[in-house]
Length: 354
Image (tube, rainbow, N blue to C red; front, side, top):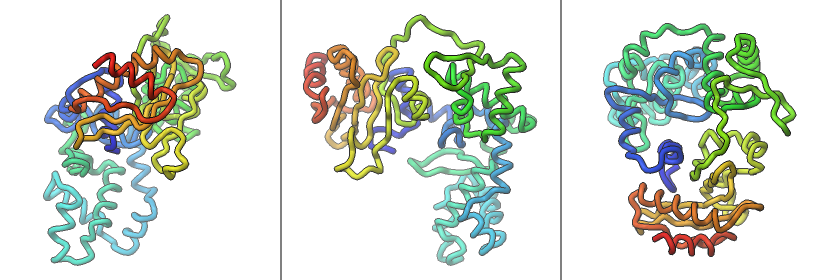
C-alpha cells in the first residue's frame, strides 16, 4: 500500500519519529543483515534471529500446499523444482527475470504467474528468501546464501521450543495479552499456543493475571515495565501491531477500527487509508491521509475525533505530527483538511505551526 508510504516504513516512524528509510533497507537487505522477510502476523520484516523459530512453519508449508501449488504439482511435475534450480543457478533473481526472457523459448512452461506462484511457495517453505527488492518486486536467492551464516547454522529447535520462543516474543511486544492475542502475533494454532502458554506459566516465564473489565485470563511478561503514565503522540499504520488485532484494540482503547480500502467510496465512514492517532494513553482521532507527490503535499481528505477528548489538544499535537510526517516524506507541506469534525480546528492548528 503506497497511497501514503510503503507500510513497512511507517511503524518505525510512529515509534522513532523522523529517520532515514535507507537505514531500514540496509538492515533488511544489506551485507550485515539484521532483518528478513517472512510471514509474522502478516508479511513482515523480522529479526534474522527469529528465522530458526519459524522453521516449523516452513516445514508444514512444504506438505500443506495451497490450490495453485497443488495444480502445478499435478499438471507440471518437476516445475517447482526446476524453478528452485534456476534460483540456485542465477540468483539473486526475480520471477520476471526467469519467466520473461525464457517465455519465447519455452512457451507456457515459463508462464509468469506460475513462476511467481512457485517462487512464493518456495519462499513460504523457507528454501528461498527475499534477497533484496526492486521497488515492490521481490528478488529471491537461496536462503543459505542470503541469510547470515550464523543464522543458517543455528540448529532447528523442536517445534514445542519454537512455539514457546514465539509466544515469549509476542508477550514482550504486547506487555499483557490474552492467549488468543499472543497466538495471533505469529499466527500459531490454538493447540500449539495453549500448550506453549501453559508451559511458560509453569516455568515462571509468563505470569497469569486478571485485568479489570476483561472476561478472559491474561498473561504478563514478567520483565514488562509498567510506567505511571504514557506520554506519546503517533500516527499508526493500519498494520501496526498496536492496532492490528482489532478486537484487542477495541477492548483496550474503546476504538472500533476497520480499514475501508475495499469498501465502495459512497459507503466509507472515515475514508480510504485511515490512520489512528495515539495521544497519551488513548486513540483519539482517525486521519485519512494521502501523499500527493506530484503536488508535494500531504493531503487530509478527512479527520474525525473520538468522543470525550480535548479537541484543542488533539489538533495541536496532530498538526505537529502531520508536519513531521510531511517533512519525512519529502513533501513541502500539509494541505488543509477537507472533511470531518476536526477539519476546521486542525486547519487553524496547522496554520499556527507553519
